[in-house]
Image (cartoon, rainbow, N blue to C red; front, side, top):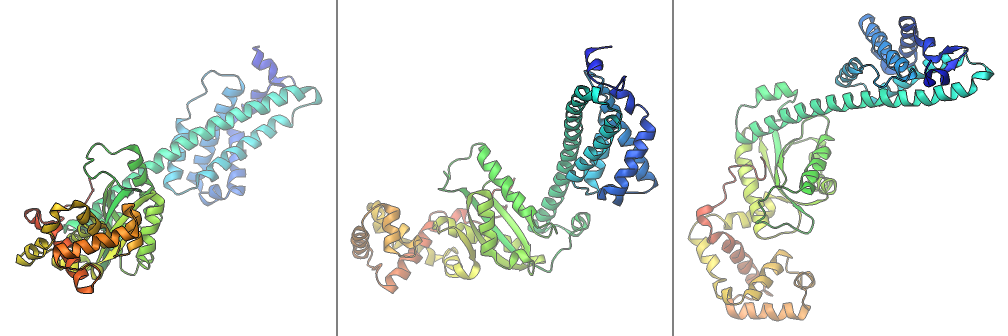
Length: 418
């Protein structure tokens, strides 16, 4: 008899002997679980009863081996397969853990009821060993559960990304929608998103995404997964992408709040442009939304969501043609004065609020006023007058596109999406 055997002797027998009538004990424990543990009761039936009995038997075999001090307990593969099946069936992992621990509690009671006063020390050691057994079994269940859930989630994400891609590109989406169990809505809010770390990012940074960016994207994905009806579709990369929300869906009731939630979840800054569109016209709406977002980026507007109506004038001003060249030329005289050009750009992006511009440029408000007067003298358009403001804003918009008209944005591909 080994030391572990001597330590675990109850009423003159090794504690493990009291659990060796595995089939009968397995049936007893399984019946208790089916009666008193709700998930097991919900799964009850001839085949499921047999499954619970078989898995209980595996757990008892592992318990017996660990009570005997085995260096390597029997394989928990059968238990892991059952846990994976329960994960697919939607059984909560905490319910499975409870079932395992209830079963272990019954097994421990079968030993404890045989103990005498002289077995007190041995029973304490049995209790310690049962803690180890519980840790082993719940770890096996947890690993199998999480592996299966990750597989299910990955499949669901892949299907939803495929559906989003089909809708955004104009390919036939009905077969994919049926596979996902998603009904294609009559109309959508088509949202183009630009994601950046709070405080901004280097636009020239094209290196591999840092871990922080990947984690931010995962957190945003988790927030999107909160819409468990799978109707909200997204195709996102670390720098942004597109989101489709059916018109009439609760998530579309307050798009500003929706973007704020994504921003908080990802702990990032998000600018977004949205266009409402029939499902059949999503590809064109996507191009328009990304064109609007390009305007937001070029003008460095504040974070938030922009509708087409918010940027209709800016959008029209950026279309190619002689007016684009003429407006852009208004600011050519400022090329010799980079501090004035920067002041104008920041002042316009801040909606001509002097105090905000001064804070951004880290200068006094009077300095902003002085520079604005100089801009007026040099260009002939006074930033303090409504007419001058309109022309200078239009000129700045046109200028951001005039020199890149050959590369005029068509947003043929989804921003940031792999």
